[in-house]
Image 1 (cartoon, one colour):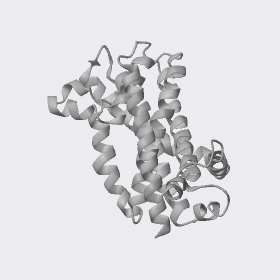
Image 2 (spheres, rainbow, N blue to C red; image 1 turned 180 degrees about the vertical axis):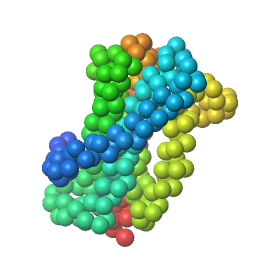
Image 3 (cartoon, rainbow, N blue to C red; image 1 turned 30 degrees about the horizontal axis):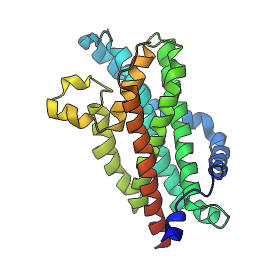
Image 4 (cartoon, helix red, strand yellow; image 1 turned 45 degrees about the vertical axis):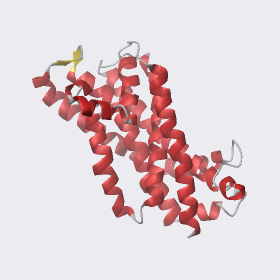
Length: 262
């Protein structure tokens, strides 16, 4: 029993860096295209909704609507970047390229591989989220010094959503099934977590539902920080993101072990 459990745990605290480095070396050949691709969706939301809908909405929670939206897009870009890296790129390395199978012939465990993939996806999220935050600061929608405070939250958001997406990758028979996760989970979460409009505008029962969404906790940390305001319940929000990063990690490794052995 213990041997089966140990097989899905990282062997040590540094093996995952080899997986991270392998992915980085492959990514840097097309780094610019990758970064632009991760920025496209949140930037379209930012300028499309922010400049258009913003003229009708006016100010939201004491700030312009485009500034409100920009802070939400920082968290949303971290969510989408880490998720897409996991359900498409990591899934391809596992199933089509069979890179994981080759790595498992070394002394590395499946836990090492999954941890390396999760941290790499979080790195992609960090790049995307920080880029959006810098754009917001350049346009005057955020305080420059706030970027230092939101960077750890962006990274933790990336880890949380990469771990969740790894469960989806472990269960999906093919790429076709990822569209269900995107349309039924990620898109509703975007609109229910306060990224596009305040959660307080939602019905009471939906507001309670939003407290279970990791994106909502990420936004509750990032939005005040980007405006130099103190955030409420910081440790609670961080704890929720930490739980979403850790528990799905162990669930996904167990599911992946069963999948790879079948």
